[in-house]
Image 1 (cartoon, helix red, strand yellow):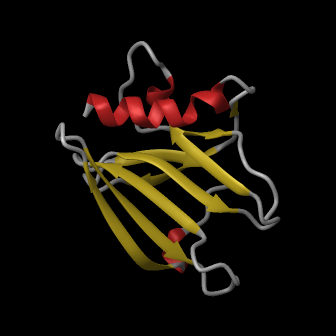
Image 2: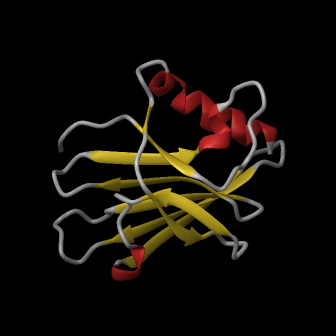
Length: 132
């Protein structure tokens, strides 16, 4: 689990060094454990999307995670929204294409602490992306 968290933080660390998070109002969703998770209001509603694929990742050290891919039938892109869960069912990261064609992402804010990463069940926007 620690190895997976280190991997996620390592992927996001460059973003952290460039004025990472932006504050936004939050909405409530549910993780695979049926626990409430707070998400940015700008996160798309996956209820109007179709799940098109999923991928299970297992590392030799035992760390594991699951990616779920969703398609919005009203757009031309084949994947519009992605969720990443750890093996315990915690929602750690979401990414989506916004209405302007820019890739957006939100990550559990507890993982942004490199000294003590933990799951807080509150996703915050991390700045990234350029128009497609």
